[in-house]
Length: 144
Image 1 (cartoon, one colour):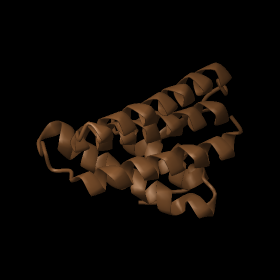
Image 2: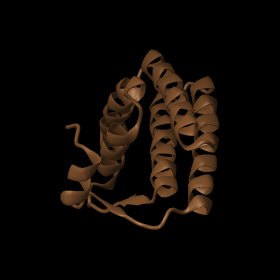
Image 3: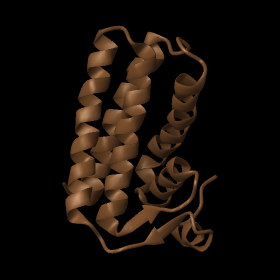
């Protein structure tokens, strides 16, 4: 699954654009809001939605990094393209978080499109914790 940035560009999963600081900041703010919403859903015992929103925080943070670095996802599978971009450009110490990001991409799809009430409270708590670590890793990478 892991591709280099050059491979992502060659396969037209992402494209180079002008870096967009304003969009990056907006997306990063959305990621922080989503983290708070995921935490609130966790407190209300809405485990499915806590995981889905935690994933969305990761997606927004990944898109913020793409905008800051001058890239955007092109493919129909743009969520996967964001995951693959993050795996390609984040520092090696964040590679486990990029794998977790992909796992939550799949779980979020399950939750939203079919497997309601399939997320336990422990899994949701881990998702929120991992999303926080992922957002913090992106923040360090792009210097928010």
